[in-house]
Amino acid sequence: MRKVLGRSVTQFFMAGSLLLTSTAAAADFKVSTGLGVEFATGDYGTGLTTDSVTIPLTIDVYPTKRLEFELVVPYLYQSNSSTTFAGGVRFGRNGAGGRFLGNGANGNGAGGSAVIDESRSESGLGNISLKSGYVVLEEGEVAPQLKPIVYVEFPTADKDKGLGTGEFVTGLGLAVDKWFGNWRPYFEGIYNFQGSSDLYALKDFFSYEAGVNWQMTDRFLSNAALLGATEPVEGASDLLEARLKLAYRMSAKSHFEGYLAAGLTDGSPDFGAGLAAYYSF
Image 1 (cartoon, rainbow, N blue to C red):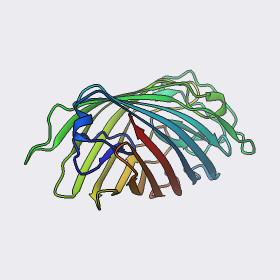
Image 2 (cartoon, rainbow, N blue to C red):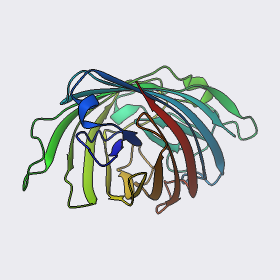
Image 3 (cartoon, rainbow, N blue to C red):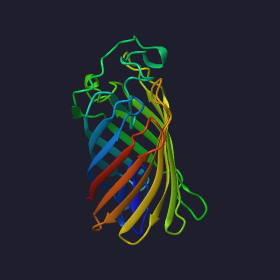
């Protein structure tokens, strides 16, 4: 989820990382870019450990103070094809533990099948996503900021490699946050609608992040959060992980951030870490 750091904060876009802005810039058209690298490892309930690396290119556009867009173009690597990725979450391709795929989506698919390759790594373009949020209620002395969200994930990843499901994901959600001194609790929830697949018994699912930011100094912002999702496919378990993140402001236009994560359920990665750099124009 995208947070904001800096003493004069006017926007808080929940989408996965921290974004530096200023009061003057937030009132005008603004663009921010970021490049990161994220690592995760776990068996995701499959019994086979998968190491994955994600390199996301993030482009944020702020046409107005209230309206925001975020485009994410990820490059993916995974050490085997026992997992896949959709709707912002990774999950096992073998569902409840079977060696083959194919139950149809939501009970309506044609029922295809594919073999999981335990020995071959896979890499390539992931699913490109676009998220938009519009502030319908600005933060006041008592009222929190409210921002409805629309999310679309395009099936640009190779489903034969297990880098995606080959289906569109669309989502509707809401982000809520408010400053209390140097502390800012927040919550973002999105209900995701998945397409119908002949390889996976896909389910519509709810994903969320709840946490708190602490403005430690003018340059440092820390974050503690829980990220979770209900099961995205038949036979999988719910996902839940804890994250600790630290962001450092280099200048009025650039900042760096890093995080550590630990999974709390069988469907989550055992461990995760990430680094990213952002620049605002």
